[in-house]
Length: 372
Length: 97
Image 1 (tube, helix red, strand yellow):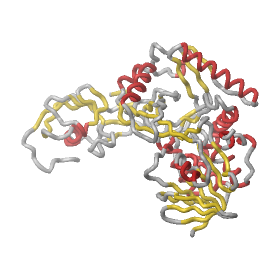
Image 2 (cartoon, chains in turn brown, green):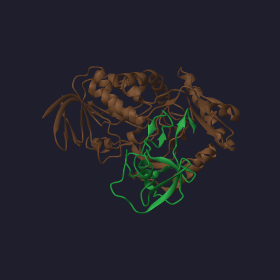
Image 3 (tube, chains in turn cyan, yellow):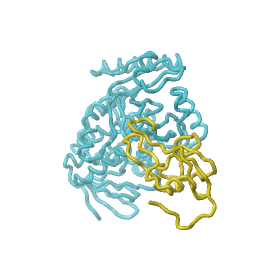
Image 4 (tube, chains in turn yellow, cyan):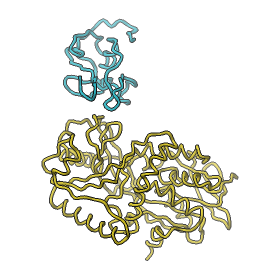
């Protein structure tokens, strides 16, 4: 049986961020296991926003946590680029969202007001401006807005990143700094003990002091064995990519963003489709129409690829950070927004795992909130 | 740089960058353009770097050419036809040449 101090189950955006933080904090021998094939791999399928815009509408704790994550990205991103030698196409130059009708505007204005008030109570400033059509067009001077656009909102300190480069950079830095990465092994069972836990994969058995379960939807099965019911469900999103264009969209929007390579990504769909990662003509059609309504020039772009992705969503959208009842050495990290939250998953979360003292700011982001 | 290993008897005439060229019938546009001795078919929109067909099987998107007024066509997936108008997508300072 092989030994490690800490085993991280899951090498996606959440697992890799945490594992990287653990080796940076010199947590001893850290082993990260990733099944690699035959899983949904949402870390390789997402849109790539690093933002807090509209997050935590129903949860002030999560709203503040998401805000803090983006403040931390300002350091985390450049540091990761420096350590890995990989450019992440990362920029915190703002995120916008256009309004195509008065109803849409009214909802966004109300949500923005609510989040601003929540922030004020909690001692920070939720940064978001409501703009008219002219002001919004000034953010994107090289692209003409569709006639339906009546304005929009803009948060100047949100941003975006290439999520594939981010994942690669985190894994590379993790390995460079002494972490062990085992790809292609599937964890079958977590067997808790008095002072040690045994992790059985399809190939090997490992013994360790602490376990971090960051296996996305795969976490449900692993924790079921331990009598823990995770309130996770799949929520599909579909993305489309166009051919490369000269740089013309300087800030990402919720619906479209232009990547560093020049392609436009389009994607806003939210559907309950079980664990089907396929794509549908209906969603593609509706997304493409919205994109063209927003920027008529996009009708001339070629659509070259599309894919479906299964979001890891909890019942209330907020992430779960907790230990398993009766086993305070088995940690669970699951939830949506693993790109935006990577900065904290790589700093505050590893410190909690090492010390065993859960920070106050995430005390309410545990499992207990689902069992009231 | 490229030459065909077999002399094809049938040829078609394409207009490449405004000049007529006789190319073997039945080959892909990408192969035909490479066969004329051109070393690159487009420049990157971001870096300006010269690019050329690479995979020749529809995967890499390196071979994009303007074919009969339609930009960004995967030229390795299109067969040459008599009279086809093909323009390489060469840009300098972000402007199409």
